[in-house]
Amino acid sequence: MTPARRLSVALLGLIALVVVGYFAKDLTGTSSDPAPPAASASGVPGADSGLPVKSLSSLPEQVKETWELIERDGPFPYPRNDGVTFQNRERLLPAKPSDYYREYTVPTPGSDDRGARRLVTGSSDEVYYTADHYESFVVVDVSK
Image (cartoon, rainbow, N blue to C red; front, side):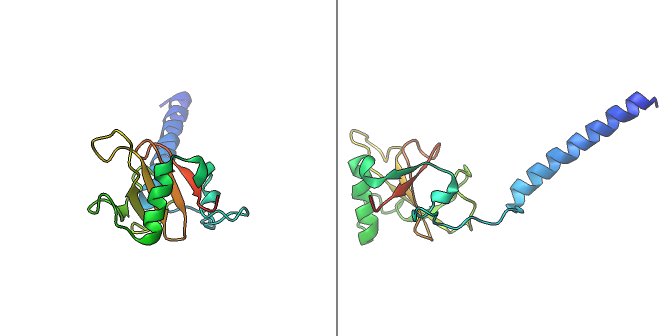
């Protein structure tokens, strides 16, 4: 084997190891970084997630109505779907144990089904909103 071919094989092997290591880390959910605290210096739980923070008052009125239902523990418009475990399959929210998050339907005016809007709550008082069925999230500052 020529020296150039040995170098090519070695580089290919190194690239393969890096790719396998990257995906193995994602599958195990481990990270060398410590978990961020739930609240940032601003005092908004979840703000340290790196997601944008929006005040509750800046979101559609139905978000506030759903938040008030959560605060009162219902009754919810979709009792089979509201308050159930949110799996975070998209991995857009911080990695937490499987029962950490709960999801709730935010009604969409004019929709004949549940629509795409949801509030997701975390066990440490975080509140996240998605208007596009988990493709993106914002942290909700429920105090504003």
